Image 1 (cartoon, rainbow, N blue to C red):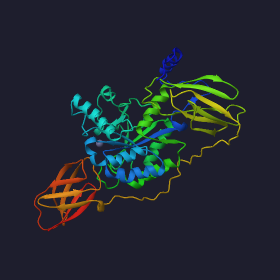
Image 2: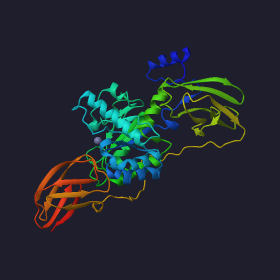
Image 3: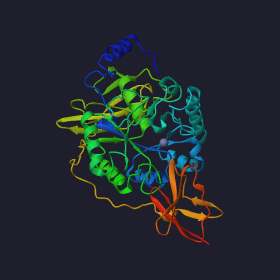
Amino acid sequence: MRKLTLFFAFTLVVNGFTGVAQTAPKPYEVATWAGFRQAAISYTFDDGCSNQFKVAIPLFDEYGFNLTMFTVKDWSGANWSALKTASDKGHEIASHTVTHANFSQVTITQQETELKDSKTAIEGQITNKKCLTMAYPYCVAGVDSICGKYYISARGCQGFVEGKTPASYYNISSVICGDKGATQNLSQFKTNFSAVAKSNGWLVYLFHGIDKDGGYSPITSIELRKSVAYLAARKPKFWVTTFLNATLYSKERNAVSVTETATTDSSMTLQVTDNLADSIYNYPLSIRRPLPEGWPSASVTQNNVAVPFRIVQVDAVVYLIFDVVPDAGEVKILKSSTFVTPEVDIIPADDVDPVVVNRLDATKDDISAVYNNNRILISLPITVCSDFVISVYDVRGVKLFYTNVSVASNEISVDVPSLKTGVYFVRQNVWSKKIAVS
Ligand SMILES: [Zn+2]
């Protein structure tokens, strides 16, 4: 945070009335989303269902995108090393509370403990990053001021696509995907994509299960892959990014002031500043201006260090686009004498669909189930999530028994009535496993 001069304070207040606080003198423009893309899209995954690790993370790595995992602290014991590995690749590991508490059913004190202790636990495991966002279990929002002590944004699931700036950063809407939601296949994903492009907004998706991992509202991995491949073919149009990065970017973009403090024939000096806490709000903002008349090319530095820039032609205008961090030092635009051919972004038409092949599909072979002394012990490849029903059927398909199970483990132990010698089937939502009792 830089000390605001009277001038900056004044411009912020004036623009506050219009709802857009970004200030940049002509010909400078601050992008609504990174890289001057039309919209932001965040894929968020709750509860740590096993195929989020086996399918989603490898898929996003393959296409060069990052996702957000909302982790339940008490459910994730076995997964910390996988979460740390994901974090190191740029994925966001954020909070889904300690116990997956329903905030309409716990006290204010308990809510605060859920928020605080999950953050502390995640930061204790992933020590090189801050845990700054959370998702409310069951999409039941708590008290903004308590959440705001620990987090800069929180996710709900109201089902609509947010605009450029969410109505409330402590209850950002998401769209539930999978068989319990309205988004299950590529054509439905595309409906959301075109809506968010039109509004220059922020689309947040919420996933639980993938294929047959037992998670709530599973999406098929093939449709998930198609949606990601569709966006990968349109990287200049859609910014696929973590929940945190879209939060940081949108708040910084609304708060930033750009001023040109000096110009010569071969350089321009800019101050890019905001009133946000610099220890948190350090995501680069994309700024552009037309390449000055008569300049063959340009380069950009901030605090005397080169920063990423592109020279891009949009219609008849050649722009210099560069990424700088507010309050991270003076920005210098320098004339370069080497001519560079401007890039032109090519975006396929909306109806051009990706051709994809699914590679990884969880099967019941990953699961083992054994009966022993009135107990069935089920082993899964990784920690499973949520509440679900386990049922036991005989070979004729008659249901003998069922029970609700709430787990935070890759081992599920279910007490069942005594089973006679024979063959039975243990079923859980989407998988069925044969067991032999001898
Ligand atoms: Zn959940």
